[in-house]
Image (cartoon, rainbow, N blue to C red):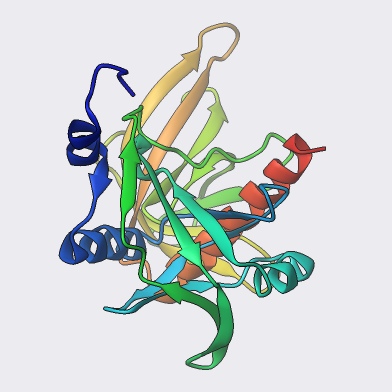
Length: 243
């Protein structure tokens, strides 16, 4: 943040203060199902979550995966929300988080924040999967004949990328009639995809290639399953970094 800016210029450049601006920003995070980190207890604890609903008087967000952290969050006076959509840091404070029943599930709510800070544009945010992940994407043609099964490099609700050894039998613009990915024993993706790019990333030997694929017609329930998987991966990664 430039030191030469006045307080008014800082507020105008970095803060959202109007209720409609705030609701629009929060609803954008909800629509994207953007991962949000909620820090509390002096930054010693956090949960990874998604926002569920922005009302005129309250913000509703999902529970985290850590039951201990959820329990602590329900008894603290304030917390800080941080998200990074498209490389832009979005941050705001929540007061008196309260656990309640939202629909058929438990969730948290806080009063609608009176300001949101937006800082520092960066390169596009990507959900890179850890090297030890064992997610594989299986590609099949219209007759369900195997095209190939490759390890996944990254994942989002919009698509994913795989890494191949040797040139894959795919080219940009190809429609893949069936793609199967097992996120867990219960959450399995089975959908159509389209190839966005085939990029060579290593030239020695057979060469290695990165294949980017966009999901087509992915049901909302699978979008939610993907987002929960991403949140789980991010939570595990941050736990390792904090050790």
